[in-house]
Length: 351
Image (cartoon, rainbow, N blue to C red):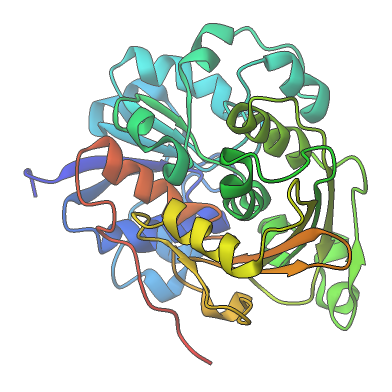
């Protein structure tokens, strides 16, 4: 349909890509006009995902910026870290809007990216400065004006949504923040990895990348910008034997020990009163990942421990949706001036 926005998805064969295809097939104002990939080029989408073959059977094509731009006005890049930066400058020069789901444009200072992602020297600092961090609950106004959106990581999305009200109001000692987070195995991507094999991951729970996970500086960068102070925090991720979902538990010392749970619930509800995709749960109710599966929702519950003077905030999202694809579609809707809920599922399957 010519009245629909032509959209390309590069990296369509991965978990992020297939989520985008599924969502955009049901988006009323979008038409998928280009599917790109490298290792999957030449195959049809039905070859890769037979369960969607009756809806879309386009061929996966090579990632050629000129050809992509000739057929798409907006391009989603769902690629491994280090590849989006090779395509984005040309796509922008051709007049495309770009939503990057990798880490390539999440950092204003590319030396931070180079240090944590070890992807070699970057020469596109000017492009990186143009990127807007794609967390709509924080930067909706900037996203609306952007040509390049750097979609947040899954762990940072869950962690930052739990932290934002505390940082905005200066309610916690920012030197005491600890984040303990768990992710399903789909967070590791679709490529074969030994630690993600059923025999390895099933019936087991373990931490990884302790004190060295690449999402740490991403969370710190945004937390610092919001609080107005440099934030150094402790972040520890865990792999849990389920397919999808993230549960982040955030601890921090309250500046005023007189704050009660009800006080803080009122603050959280006020901060997120206009956010369609964040639900602050009633007192004594704490989120579960299953509640968010297949949706763009983030569920938040909190508790105050008067004995230690700490607040404990728990957030749950679907790592492939609010942590990846559906949040990118949310950003697209904002960029185009549409209702931000268009094409995004609101209700999970349960149980």
